[in-house]
Amino acid sequence: MERLLLFIIGILFLIIFALLAKIYYLRRSANEIAEAFRDRLEKNTNVLIDISTRDHCMRKLADEINLQLRLLRKERQRYQHGDLELKEAVTNISHDLRTPLTAISGYLDLLEREEKSENIQRYLSQIKNRTEVLKCLTEELFRYSVVSSSQDLNPEHIDIVRALEENLLSFYAVMQEKGIQPEIELPEEPIYRDLDVGAVNRIFSNIISNALKYSDGDLSIKMDKNGCVTFSNTAHNLTAVTVGRLFDRFYTVEANRNSTGLGLSIAKLLIERMGGCIEAIYNNGKLEIKIKFAE
Image 1 (tube, rainbow, N blue to C red):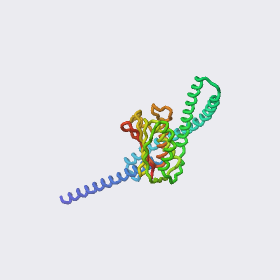
Image 2 (cartoon, rainbow, N blue to C red):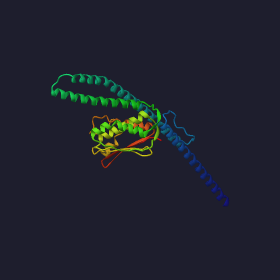
Image 3 (cartoon, helix red, strand yellow):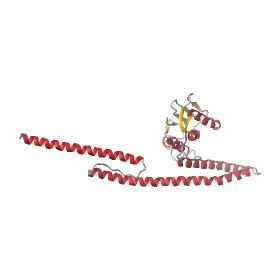
């Protein structure tokens, strides 16, 4: 009886050991699949997931994931190809529009020198105004296509406090015209970051321009000692939904149809390319756009 009991205990011990070994290999295989899956998503590679275990179920799982990865890779390639074609088309179209618009502007300037009635003068003024708007939209579209297609940035050791000051000064006349007296709080000490100068200026310029478009008459710019910048203004014509889409390409608020809606998209694209972040917050009629550059 005692031998039988020892035999049963031995059998149970072997079963438990086998189960533990099975669980160990299954967990190892699951970890291998998880790590390999994460790696395949991060890298554009044709290498499929392979695991060390011969367990039928785990290998079937790996095969199913490999199948989905193949489909995902095809969709990614199709999207990238289509996105590239779209960018090239936008670049070509916006470039082709420049020539006729320049010619139209030239003829309008010539007409301005001719004698004309009051009505004709008014009509010409409207045509010239619309032509200038179209030129601005075309330039904005062209800049976006160039920025989104280019991957080359040249980081320099720059003072972002000074960069922001210079951009604010460039908008001084526009602020005066709109009757806006900005509240500005900047650190007294310089804050240095390794960033592309042109990209930083474009980011600040686009955000300030956007704030002036939607402002109800006020503007606040604050930078803390860590280099985080907050642009805020009252904008009752916005909602939480519209603010949530401000960074979307070609999205424009209904009240501002003279814009392509690319300004903030360009700012987001550039700041993320340099490792920073940007967000928009809307609370009690106040729009806040916060940016932070990578240290």
